[in-house]
Image 1 (tube, rainbow, N blue to C red):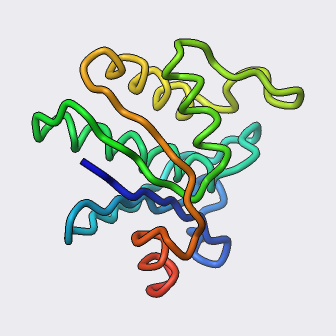
Image 2 (cartoon, rainbow, N blue to C red; image 1 turned 120 degrees about the vertical axis):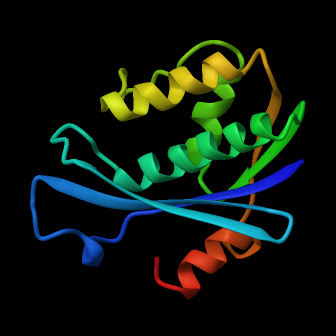
Length: 145
């Protein structure tokens, strides 16, 4: 199973309430796009809501594959950050970067804990692809999501 994922955080589409933020996570399997929008509390320590949206899309894709009794899924994304972090989950260690040595938010940690939990139930891999080859990313751009 091959699933394309993308996430989006648009500054222009934020709620008037400055205590929360909205983002969109999406994945594409076969001919079926799945697009979900989320609103979460604003977190002062979070450096990139775009990355959170991307990670959330990957979690949704893995959960979709599990729900459909797939034993292997290849995730294609245009996020190099996600590829590096998810590959670290696969080997059972969390990546440590100079400027990000811990998870920036509870949301990131929940997503990674979910992926670690699933890594024994499904064989998944992730690969980077250019933006123009990411089907769901093109759709998000086209509809300005």
